Structures are given as C-alpha cells and as structure tokens.
Image 1 (cartoon, rainbow, N blue to C red):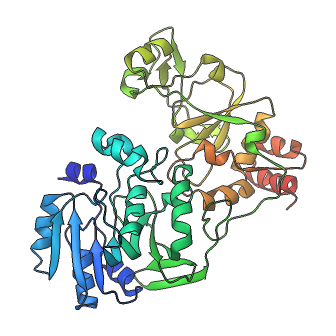
Image 2 (image 1 turned 180 degrees about the vertical axis):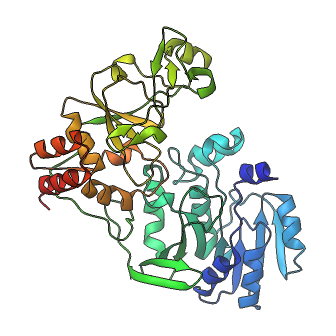
Image 3 (image 1 turned 30 degrees about the vertical axis):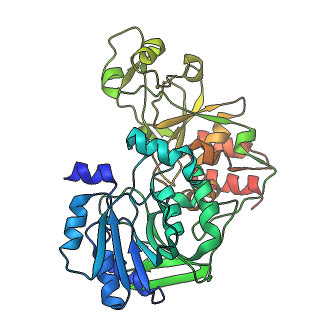
Length: 408
C-alpha cells in the first residue's frame, strides 16, 4: 500500500489544513480537485459551499472509489489530469498535487510531460511543477498545498516565473505537517492580488507581510543580503563526490585491495572536522562505469590533494564544511572544492553566520546544491583572519572575521 502511494505521489492533506485553506477562498460557483484522492477536499468544499458544483479526478481508480463512497453531490472520474484539452473547467481548483521525480515515471508519461507540453517541466523538477501548471490552466483560481522546493531550487525556475504573476498568498506551514515528508510545505492561493507572505498553522494565519521575490527566489523572512562584486563561482568550483551507483558494492568497512581509498559521507562532515568511520571506497572508475554507465566517479586528481574543502551535501539549509588533509575520496553526499585559493578561508566562509544567513532562508531544501551555493556573494575584504579562525576551529572568530570581510 505504501509503495503504491509513493509510486503515485500521493500525500493526503490533514483535515485542519484543507479547512483552513478553503476558508481563505472567496465562494466559488464550481470546484475541481484534479488529484482528489479520497475526496476530503471536495467534502470540505461542500460543507462550506453547498451550492457549488463539485468535480473530482484521480489517476487511481481505488482513490476514486473511496471518494465516491462519501456520498457527495459530485462527479468523480478516473483519469489523468495532465492530459486533455480542457481549460477553465472550474471557478476554483483545489488540492495537493502528486509528487513524483521524473526518473520514477514510466517512459510514456515522462516523454509526454517533459517533451514540451509543459513549460515548467524542466531539468530535474518534480511532477508537481507541471501539475501545478495544469491546475492553473483548469481554474480561474487555485488553492494548493505544495512542497516548498519550488521557491528556491534551480530546476523550478520556470515554475516560479509562471506562477509569480498569479500569487495572492504564499503561506509557510509548520514542520511535521506531513508526517513522512522530508521537505517543507506551503499553501499557494491565486486570484485576489494581495501579494502576501505569511505563516499558517492550526492556530491560524500569522506574520502577514508583503511577498518578496529576490534574484528570482522567494526567500524566507530574515534572509541576509550581502554586499559583493563577485560570487563564489568566480573563485571556486564545488564538485560532487564519487557517484558510484551502489554503496554496497564499492564501500567497505576495512581496506582489502590496493585501490581502496579512505572515504567519507555527508553525515560525517561537521564544521571544521570530519568524523572517521573507517570506511573505504574501492576506487576503480573504469569498472564503475562498465557496470553502470550513468555513474560519475570523477578523477583521482580531484581527491588526491594535500588540502581540500569537503562540504556536506546532506545538511539542508545549514552549511557544514571541513578541510580534508587525509586525501579522502568523498562520496556523492559531499562536495569537494576545486580551485587555487586558500581552502581555509573557503571553509571558514561556508561555516560562517553571514553565509548561512544568506543561504539558508533562500535555499531551505533537504540537500545543499552546488549550483545554488555558487551564487553566494564573495567578500570584498581581506580573508586572512577568516582563514586563521577556521584553522583554529573558532566559530565565533569565523563569524566575526566573515562580518568584517563583508563590511557588515
């Protein structure tokens, strides 16, 4: 059951959230939920607006059967909402779209969705991006619950551009709203033109303020702007570690071959230190590629250096970096610095309070992305004090030196 739900991208919305979202909408003449699941959105819509015409679609016939069993005065249809020529089917389109990564879709669906039909189906974005685009086509207004990854991730840039002119309210939801979800969630309302950002919880709406879009992103409240003339990408390149395709085949608890190299994972990287779990990777790039042509083992020259910065890719909005002096060959949950600058200054900058106050509110996803971090403003001031504090593992000294280098 759980595997089927995951394959279909189904996440049923808590009742309090359905009610709160619908109560913010003006009364509609008709309501469509194009991924209706068990029908709870339409049930709450009927309770609020008993005269509204109700319609529910879902690709899963079992979900349609559950929704139909509620006895609502609604039309339920088992169908794929992404297909079909319909436009403006309902006054209000509601719900929680499916969440499926493109690589987990069947080939036919992937070819259709990513084949040019939807402008938001770009790069590695999730299925919910083109589904949101379709919901905007189907309704005069939308009231949706979405993952917050579209607010900042590069692969959702087209979705941000498409949605932005329509935004009425964008409301951040509390952590744990969806029990098993690893990402944050937001409510998106369109149609009224208020352009507001705020928070929504079971206790109600709070913190309403003007919606801000900066550099194409929707940063959370408190994002720091840093003065700069260049970015990290102008000074350093961050490369992902070894993508081997199967840790069980290549990572071992003890060395047993002349190609074994000390390794580390994102979870091992703390600020200014790397936990040694005694793991080794059997570094055989040609064999890795022979077994799985899609992997990316990189080259030994990237790893086999006397000093390099290793950044955790698994730390979310909090950056954690350390300088590796043990010639480790890190795995793909890490990023490795490539460049000719002072690695200790880079390490200090990544761990500093100013850099984190810039990065975290802008990119609150589960994983750190090098393409996003490349936009980090680079300080214009001297970095020698920053490097010295990083060598000493002095967090307070790093924070003070970074503020000085940025002229804060």
